[in-house]
Image (cartoon, rainbow, N blue to C red):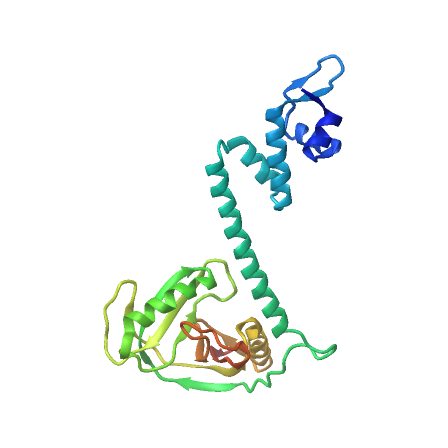
Length: 266
């Protein structure tokens, strides 16, 4: 058995860390003197201490270490968990790269603010359109899984650009969204329906750039509507004149999105 000072030198964990792991129930000494509360550690404790030290070097959290210490019984189980951690790190790296790209797209000289979109806003009358669509309720990011399904179902029957209809009056977590593709003829497919969307009168503008700055277009349109006494209705439409491909996303700075807000006069 080893006193805590000896065990600290052997394990590479500080006395303070050993006391903390004891309090947290992660690494309790094999023996504790009831009279003076001195801690004594065994060779089995040393194996656990070396594991903890190893996991800390890999940036495992205390919560993760506690779970591993409580549940892992052999090297095979540990290897599986390490593989899980590796996948988690890879996903984090991918997300951090996306954030770097997003920052890079939005870095401007001091005082210049957002990229300038000279929004030309006017009224437009749109005729009815026959389209195949998938309507769902969920996250906005869920569109990424439905768009390929719609394209696959439509195939060569497409007759126009992809557009979305947004049925909510505000940004919500469970959004009511309809993804639409104009088609020449009626089609049948799982989750896909065909119908003629009615014509409408609305405000129209065009946004140039990534979707992360689309809010600027909506801001300009709402300001225009308020100024001219117009009430905006739903569903609004976003027509993707130029956007990401099915495989390659392209440069978001080159995206072109047409926005239609249905209106009525007060």
